[in-house]
Image (cartoon, rainbow, N blue to C red; front, side):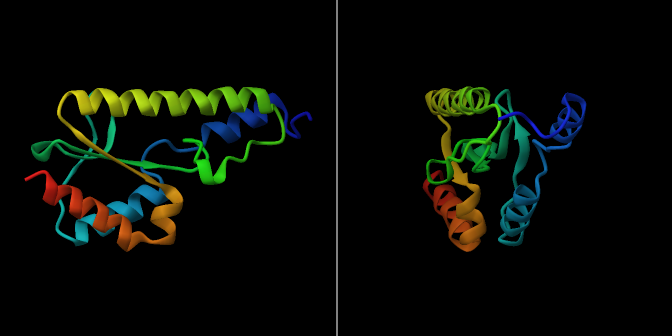
Length: 135
């Protein structure tokens, strides 16, 4: 199936997709802030979404599409081979970043977008529990 947009229009659309400060991240960070948790954004060489450097705790807020959530693995209808390779590369990169952080003493918590949307309080509690375990 071919794309319904021209190459230029598709490029424009894709360029508007945020990789930082997404609505999902902002809403989740507000909940953490209200709980009194203070953090750093996009910390270190791996650009940890939400970091607690003194506790060596890294929180990643992974959107279901870009990080190829097992529960929501829907590929776009056009250019499926490209997207499958791209998203699988993202998964491998996420695994490598988690491994590298763990090897340097960090605890890594990855939260799926659907987890945060469906049960934000539970997601905050996961972070609070991880913080407690890193004292």
